[in-house]
Image (cartoon, rainbow, N blue to C red):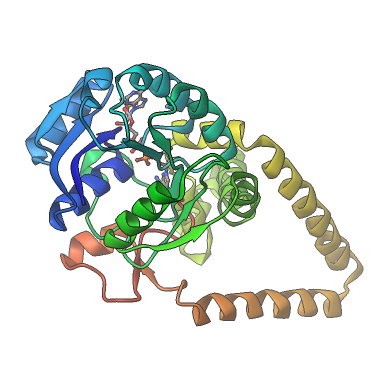
Length: 317
Ligand code: NAP
């Protein structure tokens, strides 16, 4: 599909891409570039690419596809480095979890001879680094493309075929709409998980140790989400500020309503609310987006997921 693909940032997502590109023969040559020497050493040791380098600018020379898989806050600096070295006609994409800020950060650095097609695979786990990746991560998961108004159709179609070849289903939408949708489906749930775990951590003495002991009653799932990479999530909240604050405002209002219902003993309100939320879960199951295996399960079982069964956590995206 491509002659030479450069992947910049070989963490969970970048290394999973390197694996699936190789497994499905999507490029003749893979170049892996990372700012960290220890990551480069690990990538070379795992044999994930044909060339591994920490020279970010040089890594894109001659590539017809360049994928930026660094934290959102690093996109602008990487864009400035690679812009002058991009091959005319090449496609530049990214995997960042926020789209309006990334388009703004990358847009000015990409020359008009190259094509910018931002993207976001809705697949992930709470782990990071090149060892955390696996080739089936994108299987059966959505990938959202957010082309700019100036992006030509050809490169968008090519990226659609690329992500389909990685196992994903494609949706195209505007960056602001993406950020609102992900604000409620991913960013707010992470914020809530970080808060609950922090609240438990602030408890004292016996009660705190019992929280850990009896964590299987619900708390445990929040701790998994709240163990997600701090750099990645700091950058997401700082770059999707408006959408997250809007969703947080709505959430606070709904929480206050539930608080009032509990205080007043309004069982009907609680029952109606919980019945509505149960119906949402039923819709997610119906659309085949409920079942997943964590990366731990995939590793333990050693086999890729069956069709329609998803890898990655529902929330670490
Ligand atoms: P990750 O595992 O932390 O990997 C990021 C890699 O980029 C690290 O090796 C990091 O090196 C490197 N890096 C950081 N700054 C750099 C720079 N300026 N130049 C070159 N390399 C640099 O992150 P990830 O989970 O793969 O996420 C990558 C991107 O995909 C993020 O934008 C994230 O929002 C998005 N995403 C993540 C998920 C998820 O669930 N994890 C899902 C979908 C999309 P150091 O570690 O040394 O800094």
